[in-house]
Image (cartoon, rainbow, N blue to C red; front, side, top):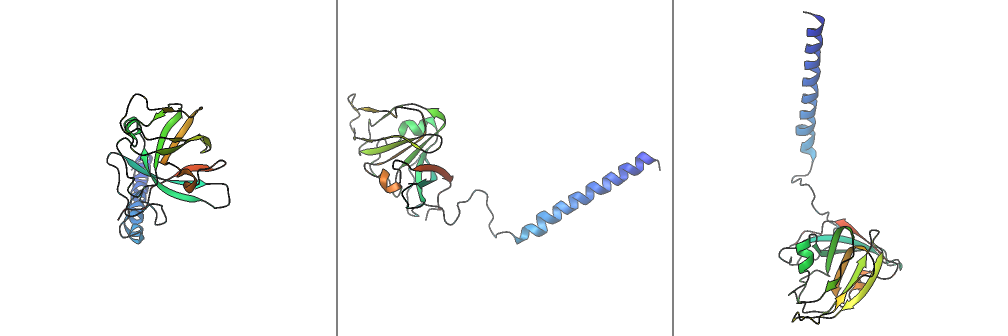
Length: 192
C-alpha cells in the first residue's frame, strides 16, 4: 500500500467516524427533546386571546410596547398586513375585530403613503411608527362606510415602517402614547 492510499483510507475512517457521531447526536441525544418538537411555535407566554378569530387573508404578529410611563412592557397580538394586498384592504368592510385589539401594517423600508377610510364602517385611531418603533404621528380617522369620494385622506407627515390601527381611542390602552416604543416580537399565542 502506498502513502497516498493510506491517507485516503485514514480520511475515509475519519469521515465515517464524524458521520457516526452526528447520527448518534441526532438520533440518541435528540430523543431527549420535546415529544412534539416544532420550529417557530409561539411560546407559552406569547400574547393573544385564545378565542380570537383570524380575518381571512391576513397574518398575525405579536408586538411589545414600552409606554415609557412606568407600566412596563405591554404585549399584544395584532392582525398583520404584511404585503401590498393586505395593506390596501386593511379594515375595509370589517366592523368587528373578533379578539384582536387592532391591525399592524408592516413595511420593509421607509414609507410615506397616506391612509383612507373608504369602505371602513368603524372609526379608527392610527399611529405611524418609525424604524425604531417611535411615534411619527397619531390621529383619529372617521368611518366612511359608503366609500364616497369625499372620504378624507390621513398622512403621517414623515416616513414610517409600521402603522397600528385600532378602534378609535384605543392607542392609549395599547400603550402607544408619546414617548412609547413599539417592536415586533414574533408569534402570537395559539388559538383555542
